[in-house]
Length: 231
Image (cartoon, rainbow, N blue to C red; front, side):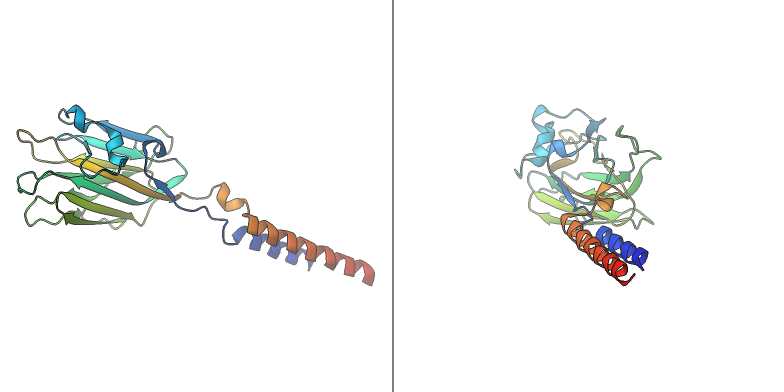
């Protein structure tokens, strides 16, 4: 009886609400373990500042360059849950078509490289591309959904990841090269992550759970006293 009660108390304490760590918002350079730009055509200095993606200014952005890429990574114990990205294009003339292919990856050793390669989940397009939709999901992929909405000079995208513990995301420019064009422009980037598998948050009781554990052990002590008295 005492063993059963002890097991029940411990299980309740460790499974009680609050033991699971909350989601984390990554909205600044320091929140990422990897924030690497590579390849692509040259980008003007005024469009090469990564901090522009986190300053909250609508017309301030970091450009990928034609064929360039951005890889963003978060800590190994986190998994990407949702990404919000805003693309900015001056004017609404319809002649600045820009796009980026989005892919997810797993970095198991913290070197910023996708172990096992990348999984394409779809394409993001700016609001200048005629009747084409702002997002297109990769064929056969169900691990993520992509939505986009046009609003003047900005196109806002939301990427929701529903499967896999991915801690890397890549945006690969696929814009058509032409004079005066420098690729997909990222005006804002925000990422929300959740726990990626078991960690200390799942095995260390939260304060409320500790109180429950204490109460249970107290009750267990009373039971032992009764047993001694009966003896």
